Amino acid sequence: MTPLRLALVTRRFWPLVGGAEMVMANMAEELTRQGHHVQVLTAQWHPDWPKQISHRGIPVVRLPNPSVRGWGTVRYMMSLGRWLRAEQHELDGVYVSMLKHSAVVATSRLAGSKVPVVLRAEGSGDTGDCAFHDTANFGLRIRRYCQQADAFIAPSQQIFDEMLSAGFDRQRIRFIPNGVKIGPLRTAEDRRQARMALGTANPILTLTESAPLVVFTGRLHPGKGLAKLVRAWPLVLQRFPAARLWLIGEGPQESELTAMIGAMGLQSRIILPGAFDTVEDVLAAADAFVLPSLHEGMSIALLEAMAANLPCVVSDIPGNRILIQPEENGLIFPVDDVQTLAEALIRVLDSRQLSQSLGSAARKRVIDHFSLARSAEDHVSLFHTLREQKQLM
Image 1 (cartoon, rainbow, N blue to C red):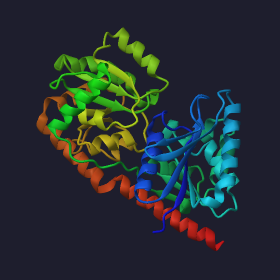
Image 2 (spheres, helix red, strand yellow):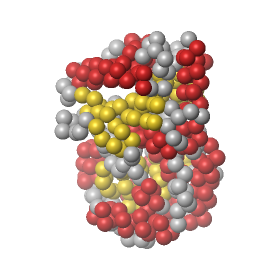
Image 3 (spheres, one colour):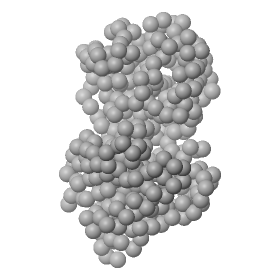
């Protein structure tokens, strides 16, 4: 296929790291690897941040985004609109993360142009984009603008169903699951080397080769269920006193979790080292992955852990059940059951046979259905189809 010239728009981007941000970073990298010309548009969240950078070899343009509430959003939208109008003749498509303010600008500024606009919905349930439309200021107006886009990406069946219920055109919604890079199968030596590298880079991540390590990666947000994970950890320590839990990420719950960990005397047992641009070493160093979320669409963090051959312990919610079959390629616990969560973590740390079986099955499922290369190819095919349709108009 002919290489595409694409602009990926995401108001939050590196060094602000979360699931949606990693989706766009990974997609930009894979599209570039496949020979397409990609640039990322995002917001300049801090005045000291440079306006242009290169991230993983991808050019990133940061647009003005003053910290004043309300005015910051308006200024960002104005700047994004000007950029899109000025560059539209150099673009074959615009891909926007979230059905929010960036989507409003892209659909309105490029209406009637030859540039297809594709919007990617993020999240489901109370934290999803469709719920945002029902509760935010001007939410229903934002939804009406979004519905004018040329196509929509729903990365999970739950998001697909929510968009239908919200009035989005079924014919323009494409179900394209999230995808992740598939690295080589990790070895015991990879685990050892990853632990050494992380401990050297950050002393608080130092741990012995024999210490069991469970990791969470993602936003530190109440919707991730991390408070109950912290409450479950003393039960794990009763069986494995040397075990460590790393909560990798940043977010609004960081201070609350830090205080909770301190009050429980777990400062040396649960570590919050901040966000990482890539979690490859973290996953290579780990013995298990945990995702206790209250709501998820299709978690990139979970897919990455599965691809890394890790046994995964996840909450019983629709988004997780899309990926995890209980006792086959992971363990599932009831959302509010701290005791069962602890027991599941103990099981995967206690049985090497179970851990290897679950991890191998999880990796195979990702290879078969959720590779980043396949996801990018599906996006490219969609953009080519939309572009051809636009040329005939």
